[in-house]
Amino acid sequence: MISAGFSDSLTIRIKFSESIDSACLAGDSNFTLKNKTVKLLKAHISREDPSILFIQINIPENNLFCDSLLIKNISDFSGNFLTDTCDFICYYIPGPGLPGDVLINEVLFHPDAAGARFIEVLNNSDKAIDLHTLSADTAGISGEHRQFEILSETERMLLPGGFYVITSDSEKLCSRYHVPFPGRISVPPHFPSMDQDSGSIVLFNNGDSALIDEMSYGSNMHLKFLENTEGVSLERISAQMPSGLRANWQSASGTSGYASPGYENSHFAADSGKEIDIHLSSTVISPDNDGKDDFLFITLNKVEEGTLITLRVFNIRGNLVRTICSCSTASENSMFIWDGTGDNNLRVPMGYYILLSESISISGRHSSVRKAIAVAEKL
Image (cartoon, rainbow, N blue to C red; front, side):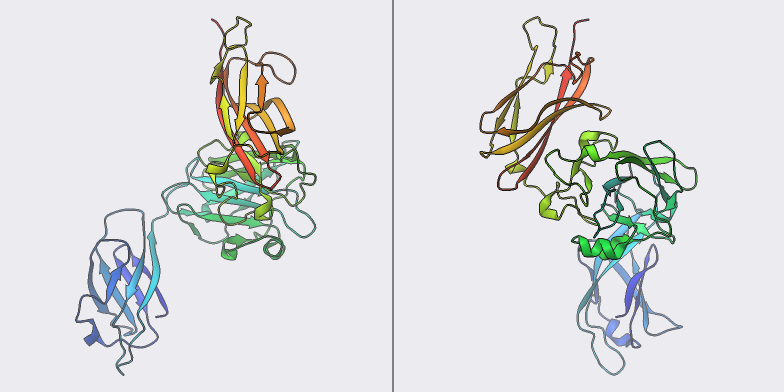
């Protein structure tokens, strides 16, 4: 077998290196799908080229169909049988990229001498999306946008859950970091320029310039206890949380080599059962000095002795409001207190906030935990 794929939504096309003996197609078990229960219908040999086989397939109407095709008992006219084989096939109708469908998932804006800048995107939808229809744009600290860059010069489908990386130098990137899927790495003609201190990235549709995703980055978003952040990427923590939420971005772990281009972010691979247990005295505080819920008491459990912890509070726009502690030594049953004020010593406005706990143990285990808090006041 040379190739297998769909010629249209209901027809699988298989190309062999030899002409196929039609006698071997008498049975109905030559071709099966590994996962789908839909029935494969009649198979017939191409009249123009006897080395090409078409199989009619009965599938429901949808935009995406992927499965493994199992092939056995196929021979040429000399009686040479093909070794039973399996090939992955996909049929898809590209869907339009809508806001939130494709997400900025990882960014390296300040590489070291051995690495290269990159932007990674994730298909967060249930449809195939043509990367040729999307572009990336960047802006520096001044807010001035640079020349945008189409993610792929040719038609290229990003399937649901798929990752795709554009970089300034694929050779450097692949030699500097662990890259298990180099086919997901691409070098555009003009990689968008990125400031090494701070800036922003925007994804948009080429056709109508509709915004798909946007995030701002900065060197101050890295873990405070990292002495050197050159060559350390910022990874998205959750696809469900907004890209503009500062608490949704974290330095890539040391165990991943400080970047994970083209595959799942290192924080998603963490064992949640080993995370520090953060216990809050309440999810609502009212810092009005009435003696009730004036303070938030934060207690830590499941803490390895000697762990360093940073506790920060962000508003729902992702702006840092208060640093409760930074690289403080923590132990079992350690307690911290937030009085509802910001770093400016003024009481924060009523609304929702996120408490972000970042820690690293003496054994090198990293943990990141987020808790929602509401600040209330009497009306």
